[in-house]
Length: 92
Image (spheres, rainbow, N blue to C red):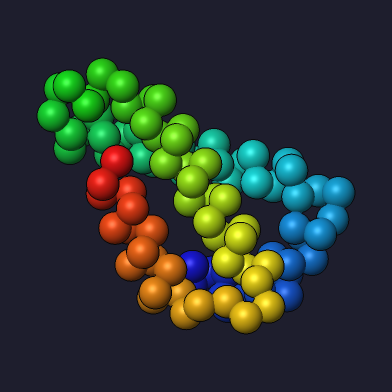
């Protein structure tokens, strides 16, 4: 969220370009790798066995939420979005 806020113009231009799909795919794939690795080492075994599936789900949600947030004209503050997003994810 900090990156999106600090690079709003760049991110908005990318999202409105033909390259947005590729950039979002790369971002999502990297997030999946990071989340998957974290889950394999930190989660209990019941969760760890599905870490790749959960990582894909979480990465997709994070990317979509960030995209939604940056494109809003009257968007809520990033702290509020992170708090709400975290609350929702923790309930899953």
